[in-house]
Length: 205
Image 1 (tube, rainbow, N blue to C red):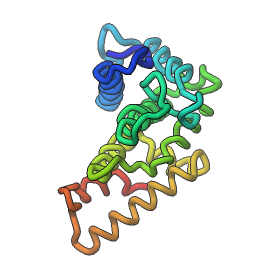
Image 2: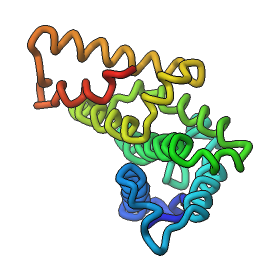
Image 3: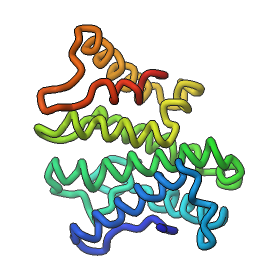
Image 4: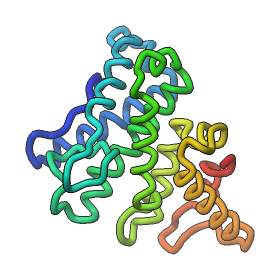
């Protein structure tokens, strides 16, 4: 299981996708409660991973501050690659940090920068309004909602609306759009996107 966030040294798509997959696996194990039940992953390992996220948050030229881009640089990166290599790892990172904040508050209590880093991540997450790329934009949006929901992001923003009102407003707008579609009997999108499932992720916003 991943113990340190890292940025690929070269433009190696397989390596970058592997990093994102490992982050997603950690999030899933946080949700299921498996993380600290494994002999090789203790609370200090989780804290070290959070520290690596704090240290690894990006802010250089070529991408706005607040992301967890896994590529060496985002300069000149095409839009579809930005979704997968800049935005998705950022969604996963803020979901992990939020889940840790809710379930293991002793970790952020030890890390003074935690809140500011998380807020910048939330802000960065608003820049595509949670949408994906091209014809898969809605499908990817629903995947993003699932990631954020699994991390407790919706719950946290509902309890702390001033933490990132921009992200909360986007979630509320998505909820409104889905509610309107479902109210008209439209339960899926043009490419089979499941609106009923999507609404479950945002219903408490």
